[in-house]
Length: 217
Image (tube, rainbow, N blue to C red; front, side, top):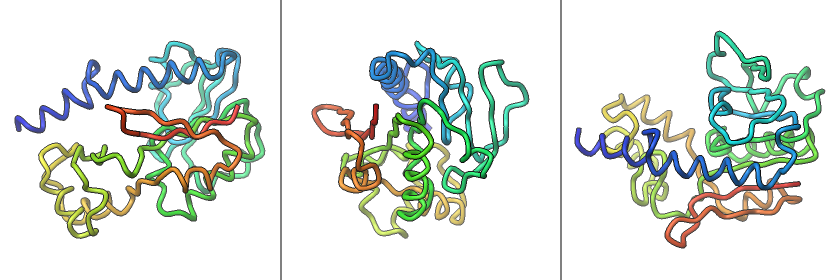
């Protein structure tokens, strides 16, 4: 329990290191896109709530997620339940100023689905910002487990069940296996391949690349 509470202090609490990094990333976004407050933004895999906490909020935000939709939405937001890799025609036919995605690309289920998501992102707006944790950072960020991403699948499932810094330790084998198989970190080469017209920015911790961001302005 003590170790699990350490995760809360490191990653999940409002004043955690993870929260500070997310705030820094939001500041980078507004610096990269000075007109953000006037933009229409498509957020693939995010939450409306997250946009209430940023220093600069876009004029319009359209969130697309597989999670249940919020019961109420502010007047500047809309939300749809859809798969970011298989967007319905009514969303694909729209155009936005910016497509945004944060820590989603690694969860969509394999390279082919990542390719489809990247293709939609590149077509739906002149600008985009796509962030994902870096595969070769020594600590796997979802479980806060050193080197976990390099283990064989059965070993990763074991860690997912037993590792005390996991978000929900003690889950069933099936749940752990499903989570492991839908978490696939990628490196810079694949990111550049998926987004050939992007600049790849590194987010660093102690001099090491912790996450990578594909940016087109």
